[in-house]
Image (cartoon, rainbow, N blue to C red; front, side, top):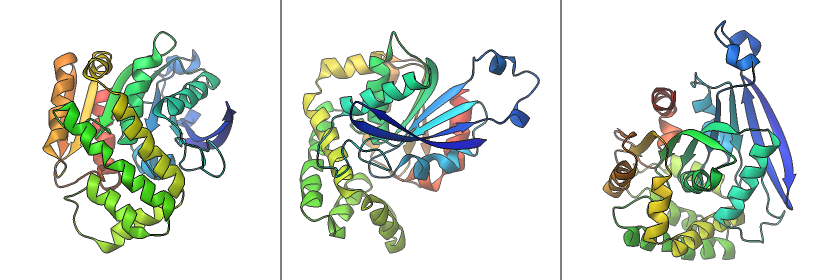
Length: 295
């Protein structure tokens, strides 16, 4: 696939993204749809703190069924800015607005959608608000933020813990302990590895205030979420798959099972011996599951 790195200015924000496209040599004789502009398209949304390409590039290399793959940097991360100094806070709705503008810019009306962690929460909101302008064919949620327990109240309480971490990071972004606090919260059973933790901290510290604003956005969204809204989100979910790490909280499985109540064509896959870092440590497995369930 060929790769383009691009920028889009929309509503005062700068959105950076990478667009992967099949080159003609990769097209088969059966790709008549390609010529008629009915391409298979995929939107990949990353988690808090680590930008799009760092999250998805290895996975993209093993995907087979899509002619175009769009990998944006969400607001506050990578090269996407709500403001250049990361001083302004933003909401999940703000993130979705920039993504809708990006999709319209490229005339993407039909596509499949994958969201990991923060990107999973954004994917749920994006999917809920997409109709009638957009048609999301299939969806994959990889440990989506907020969907980590059978009880909504428990999930909301968990996300409230993001707020003091975000405040600490804003007050002293050079202190690695605050980033460890975040890792301990989302990956409490991760295998102890000082080098791996150091790499994660270095990535999160590239845009510390943008990262903190992303955590605040999740907490704010959680405070506004009630059972009615949650059921509305789940009723709109198309067929697809939820992917969970075997070392992650059992509540993540319960949340995926709740989705199955509303969407019978929802599958659940657990990847053994990994936690919330699953997209980084098992890219081939993730790609295989996307090829299997979203094709």
